[in-house]
Amino acid sequence: MKNKIIVGFAALLMVMSCNNDEKILTSLVDYNASMETTGYHFGDKLDLPKDVLENAESITISFGEKESTSLIVDPKYFTLGDNAVTFNIKTKSGENLYQDANINVYSKSPEQNLSYEVVAEYPHDPKNFTQGFQIDGNIIYESEGQYGSSRLITYKLGENTPIKETKQPDDVFSEGSTIAGDKIYQLTWENKKGFVYDKSTLSLISEFAYPDMMVKGWGLTYDGKNLIASDGSKNLYFLDVKDPSKMVKYISVAGNTSVYDQLNELEYYNGFIYANVWHKPIILKINPANGEVVGKFDFTKIAEQYTDAKKYPTADSENVLNGIAFKGENMLVTGKNWPKIYEVAIK
Image (cartoon, rainbow, N blue to C red; front, side, top):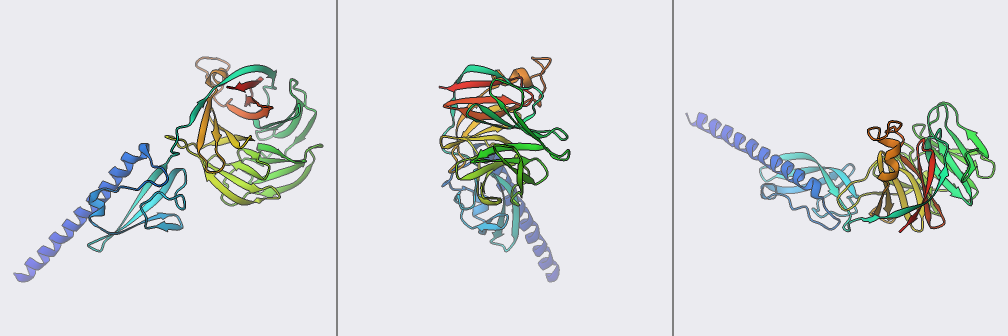
């Protein structure tokens, strides 16, 4: 009889322990879900529920290969935007519990809504699937995408006829490009490599492999020191212009309430990075020091005539805003298969 009582009591303790563990994990899931929209800022504390803290002997947060025992949102571990982490909880009863979570970190200051005025329009070849877009003097340097028709071209602003042209092999889908000194750098979408050209002749000089962390090639710009590339994620990668296979650093991009991924065509101007967001009629103004979005342009009124088929029968959802360049203090914008380039004055 005594042995049966002991066994029964042990079984009861096990059930109670399992129920308590389940309660801890449920509480943690509910807390993380409630904070996903609100998010955190650097320096904030993760105020975990009492059910978690009172039953935990220790809590460790894993970030892939990195781990932290601090519940402070520290930029040493967290990046702006969404952070996929795992909570490792050792309970006071000796159990080890694991819970995956997504922790959003936002910038502290709201991004400004930036205004503009269209001051000029120029022709743009509607056959051009624009992926990279720069201006030097009065010459446009444009990278065109699509398998079988990718190329790098130059033409005068106000004209459509290419002055120079270099075509890519049929298995290459060209992406962003930028001018750096006497060279042009161009990315490819899925080939995991980029091209380097002579600026004056568009002749191919060399190729380079992407850093391991950079998944694909999307947008590219140059800040006077490093190349800055996007790969369709929330990250921007700073690459050594002398050896673009080497990543100098990376930043993640977020606003005050939003995580911005699918960052596409890029332009660096006057200390800030400007970025298109794929399938959104907006251009972000980004602080290159930390990835904070400090401003946002809304180009819906221009872009919808090319992308909104419900309003415009000839529109196509893939004809997205995807071209940024600066002509003096004014911005030039265009998109994939757009028939126009718009010059806008920033107010």
